[in-house]
Length: 431
View 1 (cartoon, rainbow, N blue to C red):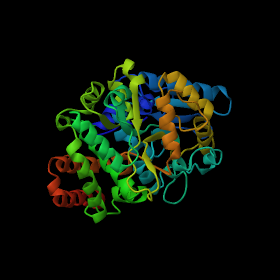
View 2: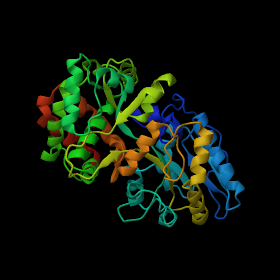
View 3: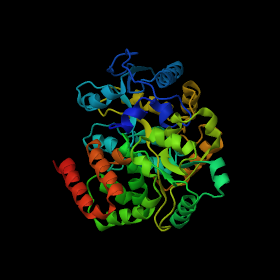
View 4: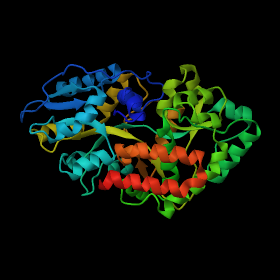
């Protein structure tokens, strides 16, 4: 539902909502500006305007269908204005701070939403959440700002995990690990068979390494510390952060040495061809996979390291927030209530032709074993984190890319790397 920059944002932004939560959705499409489906501002009791970055054909058509369905109910009217993803991202601050802004926006949960909320730019939608009692606490927490108000309504999410081919694991006589010790043992077994255990695609997609940092940090130090660190409230040269890299170093001998040279799409190809054993990646990676391979894919959660740390999972979540200056707050909340419901989210699944993971736990997703397993994993989590720059700042992602790829190359330099990372973070958060 959102665009990603750098790299990851540009790729996923072209996918639209279906690609963000999908396995086997259509391959990414160039986002292009479209003509508005209605006015860009509201007039009090008039139509609620939605500013949408979902410009790929399937996603745009799905959103148009949702608005058509809402308008047919007679509980209000809405109009859709679809903007190319990159334009939307750069113009979002202008939209929200204008004198007469659009009412509602497609975007995502995390630091960006919380930052806008801290500037009093987002509508309090706590009333909408009163009817969302079935939603898991993890999504409620993710949609709540620092003052305790809900400022976001989720539409869908997707998960990250270690993906592998079932037929290859069977051929190699190995099983999914549960703990970090089990994971390292699995890596050693695969290495002994001449298989590079861990795929990685750092070529022109170095952000893939951030998933390793995110998961190790939430497994060792917990999600609250992770969020504070990425928000500039903790230090990257803290001993707790160094502990993350100490653990990561145990896995470095098992990384595919060729993976530093090519992007995640080629790492996907290597995985499917049995040239690597497993790959820590989000579900979107399957867009680079042949459809006939999807039934052979499976995944396992990032292994538990400290059982005392509350279980968190990486689940980038997309949905909606609204302008605090909307001229029609009642109509905006009514539309949000509709979009959060079973009918809307199932209609989106049908219209988009994608296998999405709807946020509403009563909405039907695909019944494929892979999707059922992914949903169960997220439902079990006590907390959900996003991805590095969603929980942090776009401006810090290049610094993270440099630090993490340098660590993979030169793990002995971790102290210097963390000092440099902290210096970069201070420039971002303190100016």
